[in-house]
Image (cartoon, rainbow over all chains, first blue to last red; front, side, top):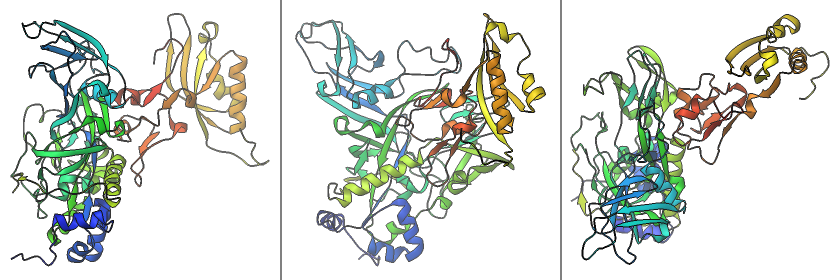
Length: 389
Length: 152
């Protein structure tokens, strides 16, 4: 028998969503409610908490099929808008990685490089309905004689286009500082010398995996908000760390859990999928992800009651330690402190700079909340767990 | 420019302007007269003379508003073209994702994160159009148009 005072099932919550009676809060509202009512009362009142994040998520990409036109082709090299794609899948399947720069990009030859256009930008252009240039080469076979393909296509022309992201939604991340004496350009943005700025990512109390730190409700088959449309969790992402050091609330103290997700690009929106250029580093894709957390019991109410003050983010030196693979942590700052605009790094006041758009994170969580309130989005039961202890 | 009530002393008037000097003026001491003749303070944020002897300067001027206008007229009489910096820098509001990365580089704190809404505020009066934000912005929402030759 369950030892919980509140017990709900996902089918029961879905029934309430269908009838338009489900109580849905975004993760920020839930934090306030749990602080006010306590976890048991909050669990009785609330059915679903919506989370949201919007940040550059490098391990993202597009799995696509270009379709055939006679004479048919087995593509061995493919470019879209001159961005190289991986073509070693099947005749006309390809994969475009978000961080792949255009083939003629000068990279960091003129330092710091601008990385004006890459895979993430192609994905944004496709979602915007723009025509992109598809170019392919093939060696030619008896069954696939065509050697070359050169044409403009739009998202509508592609028989399949799936956003397939091997690693999204990092649970916690680093605060990046630079203890050297020259400015450096990192994936966390430019870092001025002698730790004159501290750059931080993640959505704090709105972040999906901070609201379900042991991934009790998230697994293979969890239906989510992805890039402005519907997507699915496929399981753990690459580099998923199931057993991180945690604080007394169970929140990881270092970057740990990750998710692999997918969704049909054709129903996504460019507002929540933006190609980004990180000066001196490279290209990427900012992805909006929102995950609904069902409040099955008071434990889930307590977890979703997480506040920015509970979240401890490790501060790391990206000037020497990070590039040399040294694990040194300079200390932890709470997300509340990071949002205040200033933290202490080695006793020195350092201005903080966000990399994640918190206003967009809230927009994601609120949009998912609206979908559920309107009965358009039902929750699913995970079919396989993601290990997390 | 609205007229202030008579007799009210306006202190701390401050404006950042972008000056363009034709070749025949760029070699002459003109800007220093803002201080000598009109009691204005100025701070040179950026200055350049091209190989063709065209001069450009980003200047922060402070003093009384009436003196500022006199000074600006003096510059105009000396063939210096004056453009408010606000007309030289743009944010594409639809493009900006309000991440906040630009706030790391902004030297004049014209770009700051609003603590409440978590949106990035752009206070153009404080901007010196240095252009650092245009390099940092991951979605190219900031654009500076600083001289006629397309350089910035």
